[in-house]
Image (cartoon, rainbow, N blue to C red; front, top):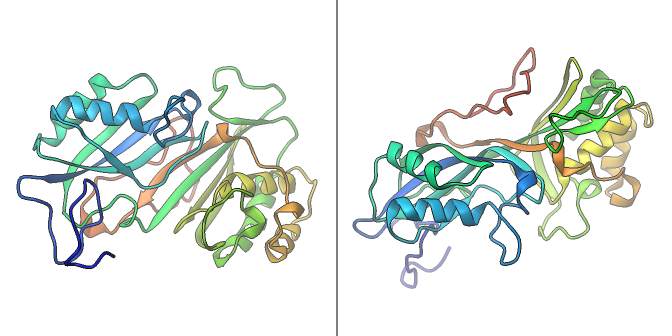
Amino acid sequence: MPDRDQWQYQPNCLIPPDRSLPEGVGRFAAAVEYHGGLYCGWQRQPHSPDVQTPVEAALSQVANETVQVACAGRTDTGVHATNQIIHFDSRALREPRNWRLGANANLPDGIRLHWVCRVGDDFHARFSARTRTYRYVIANEPARPALFSGLVTWRRKSLDADAMHRAAQVLLGEQDFSSFRAAGCQSVSPFRRVDAVTVWRRQSLVIIEITANAFLHHMVRNIAGALIAVGAGERSGDWLARLVEARDRTKAEVTAPAAGLYLVSVGYAHELGLPAQIPGPYFVPEPLQGATFC
């Protein structure tokens, strides 16, 4: 945190406890849904289509001023989101409904806002977040799906979802996830806290759901690759525990494709008053004993 005497406001910054937004400026949060296959990740890029740029452009149209946004967590090329949480500051104090309708009218195909709400000065989409939840969706059937191409990962070989779920429970708690960390990961620490992992099957879909305080680069996709090997009978049920202990990415399986990965929920303190998040995606049936989202 900067020294209070040196602190100067910048759009979307983390506001110190004894400070507030400039007079006339409001802070807003929003939930963004996007088709990651149409974009090269969330973050603004100069030479490739990204999600952040059109979202900022659409909100700027509504505000009639330049709007910058901050997100709960960046997603890579091909990764989808049903509830990417963002926040932005603006002097244009529009009603939440007008922000949503106006932005959606100016957004391209594949990006939509679910809701917009006014939040307190101390809210920050990234730093106020307590958890992130991802779902990895696998079409487990003999033929590659046509209608959901790019929206799911396909595996022809039958997967044992129950075996995958049992094996995944060794991931719970705070521990070193070096075995699931991409070589280019820039995080200072390989430790993360996994709060819940659930694997279930509904007809031909196998869904992996994982909630953690944060994730390393490619962590969910690398976990998915390992669990798929367990489900296919290529690895034993206790192999995953040995892999966690090894702290060695070279001993793990290949990284699962991005197409099946969705950021579905970001958890915040209930007193912040954010609208409910429906995890989705819409074609994914919920588990019989559904997880709790906040």
